[in-house]
Amino acid sequence: MKIEINQDVCIGCGICENFCSECFVMNASEGKAEVVKAEGCDSCNAKDVEGRCPVGAISVSE
Ligand code: SF4
Image 1: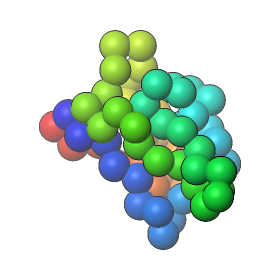
Image 2 (image 1 turned 180 degrees about the horizontal axis):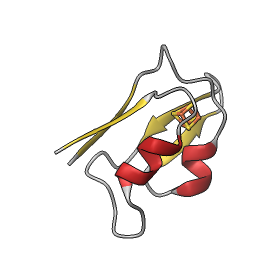
Image 3 (image 1 turned 120 degrees about the vertical axis):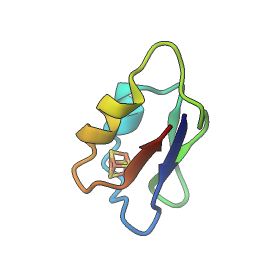
Image 4 (image 1 turned 30 degrees about the vertical axis):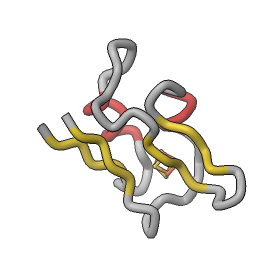
């Protein structure tokens, strides 16, 4: 699995970090989310998080 965030699209809402702070963190200086665990983790379903991003900035590929 590979999780990616399109930085040009992210609006910094924080939903992804709220859903899984192990894979996503907010970049304080940029105000956007970054992926810190691109392979995903045991405690979240990355595909579910992908669907929760309001602007479709998250992509999850196999
Ligand atoms: S949910 Fe989407 S728009 Fe919101 S911070 Fe995460 S990547 Fe950015």
